[in-house]
Image (cartoon, rainbow, N blue to C red):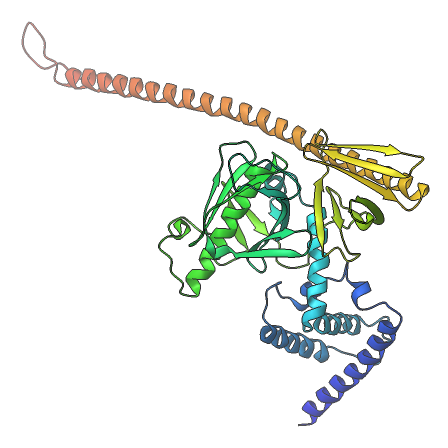
Amino acid sequence: ISEMMKTLSKIEELMQDIELTYASKEKAGLIGPTFYPESHFFYYMQCHFNTTESLLTLQYSTLFQKLCAKYDPTISANDNKIFQKALKLITSYKVLSNSQLKGEYLDQIKIRAIGAQTFSFDSEIHKGLFFPFFMFTVSIIEKESEKISKKNTKLLEVNFIKEIVTLIYKGTMSKHYPFSSITRVLAGFQENELIVDFNAQKPIKLSVHYSDQRDFLIEILRSGSAVGVVHAKKDKVNDPHNINFKRSTAGEGDEIRIGSSQIEIVMDDHILPSKLIRQDVVYKKCETLGESKRFLAMGTTTLILSKDKEITKIVNIIPIKLGQILISTSVEAKNVSIKNSFRSYDLRFENHDIMLNWLLDYKKVVNGINEYQRKQSNELLYYLVNKGKQHLKVQRLKQLDEEEEKLALKIAKIKKEKSKIRESMKEGKDEASGTPLPYD
């Protein structure tokens, strides 16, 4: 009983110290939403993005009791590692147990993931893992003769946490499709086209605005469908029309198969996407209002145009790739024109200095992407050369094996002939007298 009382007093003392420290840091703005970007809340709680609230509470209780058992109140808070761990644990629990704060935190991770998403399937394979959020600019084609225009342009978001595909129009209007409802994903006849077939619905024909992303999006949707089927099976949902029930699926872990490669989905915040490089207020030409306010975020591979500062109402995704995007400026008017194969965006910055700084950062991003692609192409070339050398070595080994087999047969034949000669020598007789000859 005395030991239990000591443990309880230590817990109460630790809780009081932490609550006081937490309150002071929260008041100073060191904890909370402003502290999100590098917080690793899920990692400190040792849980995944989709961990339920009950499991989260149980995990928190278990981890906190372990820390209390090691707590020494005589050591100062700044030097006490157990105290710092407990502070991170309580902060993480307070954020993740609050649905609004948890949603805001996941939104920050999603925005960073979209800003850093790779341009093609090959680049994602090269990384060997991906974050559970993707967003693509697409157009819905309802008639064969219909052309791509601003009116039918939408954003297609793939979310592996909620396991849904969302079609977003003008940043607010959206339609959701669960992963388990995807029955087929096929490439269309045109270079940019793909067809997505949902259960009991008319197939949707989409045109991806950036041709290199078509095959990438197909593989992402197919893998999402596979994950949805696994979870549907666990929930005892059966649909014989869904062909994905017949194909090999991912299993129950965090790894799924995309194409012919095994890629890991990052389902906690131990590894975080790259930070957004900058975010600026810009003004876009508008037919009705003259100008409308937008927020332009620059990621490591993508430009994001949003209606709000929090970047939750995204209206455009512009991948940064050499040959796919052209930037032109008007220094006097503080304007930047962003052109791609589909459309152009004329944006005005608040002042001349901000525009120049934006251009400098954009140049750094382009140089970084080019350097990454150069390294990737060099690695691919190195891989192909080594693969060629390896192929020659394999062929040589096969040749040596064949020669070794021929020699083995020849040696066996020689041994057989020698044994016959020895046998005949043992049974040899003198031709004149007919008496046996000695073996020696």
